[in-house]
Length: 149
Image (cartoon, rainbow, N blue to C red; front, side, top):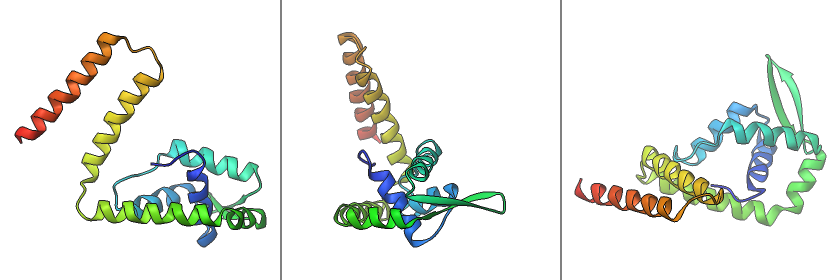
């Protein structure tokens, strides 16, 4: 869903409008994307830690939860990246509208799982020509089965 560095801009921008804790950020992003995408805790929490270490956000403890807010440095960073942030949020809003128009979140998740499995196998560069052939056959077979529904 996000290119390198974009999730940090999304989180920073969201925190600039409302201090939040990690789970709340996950739910906010999920809602903005019409339920079609939910960022994982394994992405959000390390990003929060990184932003805090960089001095772009600060955390306070409230009711046993870490609530994050943007620092002055974070606001300056957002301002310096204003155009990119604007483009990113336009894209996210359009994606969210697409999900809300009828894309089934469970199908999108299944598609992303498939994409992730294929990309993971290919990026490790240990797929043999025979495995690549079998992967392609499995995908073609799935497409045929879907067409029959």
